[in-house]
Image (tube, rainbow over all chains, first blue to last red; front, side, top):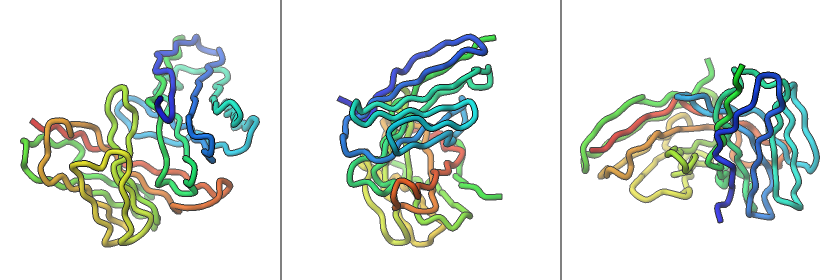
Amino acid sequence: QKEVEQNSGPLSVPEGAIASLNCTYSDQGSQSFFWYRQYSGKSPELIMFIYSNGDKEDGRFTAQLNKASQYVSLLIRDSQPSDSATYLCAVKRAGGTSYGKLTFGQGTILTVHP
Amino acid sequence: EAQVTQNPRYLITVTGKKLTVTCSQNMNHEYMSWYRQDPGLGLRQIYYSMNVEVTDKGDVPEGYKVSRKEKRNFPLILESPSPNQTSLYFCASSLRGQGLPKRDSPLHFGNGTRLTVT
């Protein structure tokens, strides 16, 4: 079992719809959870991070965390073609108050079509 | 401009020829790390450094070396490159390497180095 798993996609949604990206992790002691966006040929950039159970909203983006189910998700409301990218989930593992123990999932490719 | 600078952006080399990929950040960040990115495997950590003269292995350190003699620089060294090290490499830095979740500081990534070993 991979430490951090994502559906590689591609996930295709129409413009204006809600895109839902999911991530599961295996280490129950994981503390912090990050979503990065990576455009083709570019470097990853941080969208959001979350560390408490529940929802965290930032503009059109909502991160959801359920530690009991070891599940974190990213919702993108009113999806735009410019949201088309690969979305990477990253988890700071147990014992990892440091980025020394940050593990990425393989990424989900999102395509938003007009 | 605050940034992480990697050089070169593209590199083609032959098996066994030692090479160094440089990484420099101008943000006075304590933490620096190297990742490789391969299709279907995502980003995998090679080495990281919590501060000057403090380095540790990530998940895939075999075949790589690093050093952190100055805070701003964190070069990645391939002593004897092999074709399985053909990959896209990213350097990243963060203000702090440690901290409670509330104090997490984001990772800043360089533009990447695409390495091909023939």
